[in-house]
Amino acid sequence: MLIVFLQHRLWYGTGGMMQVYEYQQQLDTLKKEAQENQERNDALYGEVLNLRNGTEAIEERARHELGMIKPNETFFQVIE
Image (cartoon, rainbow, N blue to C red; front, side, top):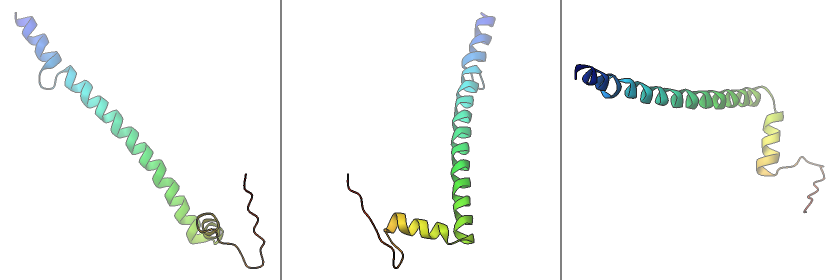
């Protein structure tokens, strides 16, 4: 009976194997989210540096997001 009681505590009690497994799953999820956030932050940091150092990134954004064109430039729109 003592062995059954101790096994029950080992697997299902406070700090038991089931709780350790759940915590490991939560830790894995948080590590994955942290990695995704780090990659996103790195991409944003690169974009910020590009915007600070040159006008090409600003020009690209203006063209793509706002549809702007340069003076004396011909714009062709292809409709498929």
